[in-house]
Length: 212
Image (cartoon, rainbow, N blue to C red; front, side, top):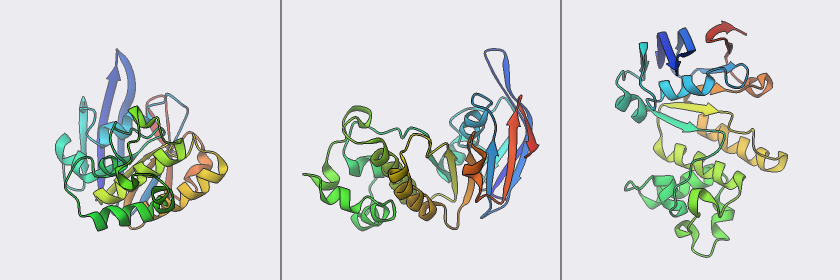
């Protein structure tokens, strides 16, 4: 079992966001969760990833129950890529020591190689405050490269294509396919059609999860 969610509750400012959520995802399986915006999908991912502390129930990810262990076992790609005020390289490695060949392989898989070759300082190019010097599509592919380089067993996707135009989205989808190949995937989106490749799809509404 790669992801095990059992009787999870979560409230925010006295509002019940998740109410007795249980879900099991096998290793290598891709599961989608749809539902209205503000329905708790992103909260669920943040609990699974260890970014939020569990208020009730339990979550295990690739054998890890504690928040720190879950964070090590997941890679996330979200709607708006969070970039640091640092170089392209540091945004991929997150400041960790990493072999240059591994960084370049991650960039190639994320469809970034040609763009990086056009930059004045290549991988050392500064992306600006909050990634302000790169486009949304480039930022998303940097996030993909970061996730590929981490090589975590579980991939969490939160509306990763919603802010991309069609042309940029096509390149991103190729990168996304390479990222998720052979991994366990939990993908949330308010658009049901974006989850078409998932093995199973559920609906999260009113704090409860249902078969879609």
